[in-house]
Image (cartoon, rainbow, N blue to C red; front, side, top):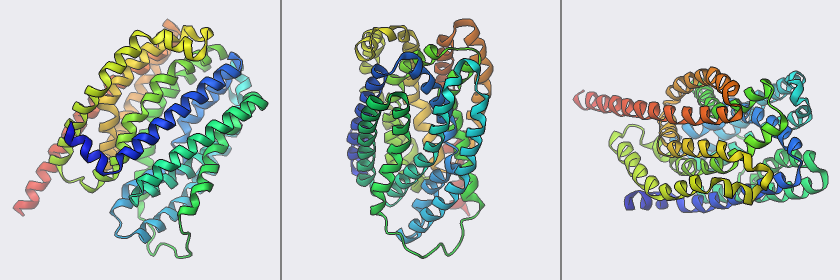
Length: 422
């Protein structure tokens, strides 16, 4: 455990951890304020639109931010990394604008029971572009080793989101909150753009098809992961779930899904580390087992407390009108705990070492399986069935990620032996 923590700190992980804690506190405060300010039905309409956007956001830029993270670290100079960043911006914008137009057109086909979500969906579609630019800038900071600037940008972004959400929700209600969601990443991008020296020189060589295909694979893998969280309530909405159902489910997800950022934060910090050591099976195996021991020791008691006092926490934070969310939250917390151990760390390691296509195949499989499971579960137990389905997919896909990780370690071990013998 000590070895894992020391290595994490040396890679500026502590600054990332502190920024992540501040971000999550800010995010929860935003959720509490918005939930208490808005009527349940309005919050439910926004939640439905957000679930759709959450699924499609990973297609922003067709995964150019993921390609930059994968191929940027292995470039020989900061200048070359900067040129790749500029290329990613241009390509990403070109791919994102048509996606926004498709969402706007599709907003006229929402189910009648959630037709009030249309305006929110149209406005939130523009957030895909602002989020892509913000995430791409953060990826650039990471590939040049500026984890402290990356951490500061996260903190500033969350503070901008907090201020905008509170002020605009207070004076403009639901529309104000939606505008805050769109503007916050854009303003953060503009603020931190000063850390990059935009020069005229272009890439001497255009990245090959591998750069683009990796981003597409990574995006497809991510959409399957996101869809496990967001597609369930979207399916529920098209199967006649009400705005109130959406609001209850959204509140049930706030605590467990905010917790997901902590293993993601660790993997974010060490993503470049994995890329640089993608041919070192001993290091990768050792890293994961150290991670497993450390994260298990740290999280077991907090998760138990969350399970025991789940309903009390929800009522205290969001009000007694959301007490009915507790059972769904309980099921989701269980799934999130297993994601901490398997699904998130191993999925990110496989993506970092160039196996995004493996992630894509097995997560797409679970996405396809999730659709009939969630439909059956919704008709059997309502939104509670959706929550249980998500939790089960989290757990099962995590074990598949573990299996794929060991296959990868074995393959590069054999490859290294062949190289030595040659």
